[in-house]
View 1 (cartoon, rainbow, N blue to C red):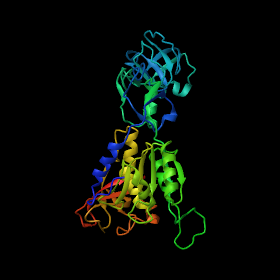
View 2: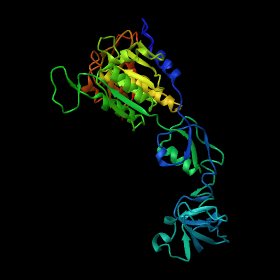
View 3: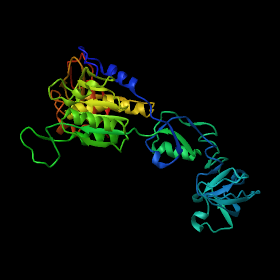
View 4: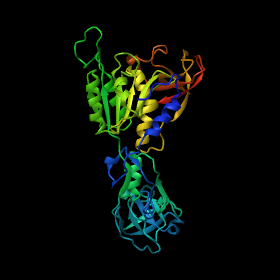
Length: 413
């Protein structure tokens, strides 16, 4: 592992260095399926046909020739019915119409639809041989024109876009049968720490409940990676080294929390010292200054994060999440940044980026307030539980005042 630099680097410098080490995941061409939700497109997708495929009815009613309704009320002969899915294309002569259902193909000789509520059938029912049209309708009324949504060959989705429910639905409707995608990276979470105990265990002095496995696996799940491996290992250099080698052989990335400082008992830093493509650095950010990251000899990316929960969560948001999205080929690596008004004032880190967990208040403008005390962010896991995002206060600012506009990341509804 390369030695920590004397001078701390910026958040952008550290992220750029990580992204240079990222290898995009293998592209797979697979049948379109709801199971692809969360995958990322590896190629553009174009409409295989016009959308809609043919002129069709937007309402339940009667398909008519609009000229026959010009002098409404008018009585028309009903010559049949066109339900959704029908291939029947009846020829309408002057004074004729057909019953038609929403989504059914419009007869080629019709040019409008009269809603059932605008006819005598609204009171007499559908079973009629003639129907009175009460209102004139113009050509195109309540007709969905062929190709009005998308034309054949038009771009539907781009490389780097995530397959959301809406996007998958659009691609299926456009006739896509196979998609080239990158699925989620395989990620392992490695938990070390002599002081950690499982929830519910009796705690001796100096011991604390282990919570970072819940934090890291939850953050991964919220990022669309639901099949993370959770591994635990005692603070023994040989065992940690062996566990990293084991996980690296079967995963694309490994996250660990704790043990990255300069102390005698910081086992992760010591274990990673013999990894030539892993580096340790200090980042000008609070919390989350000490970082170890890079690529293991076994092939997996390693993100060795600080052990304090909020420091680990901030590090995940700033560095891990964008790197994992880069692996998957996302076009957008980071969350959009919003503007919010500070509901209260607080002191800042001053000489480095402050990433402060916040809660939002809604009114005429988006307002935010600290979820934890600004002076003790790193370990305040209790207050962090209510956080809905982060305020990003750049270095050089000593104080945020009530009413100031601040840049925020929203991570929860």
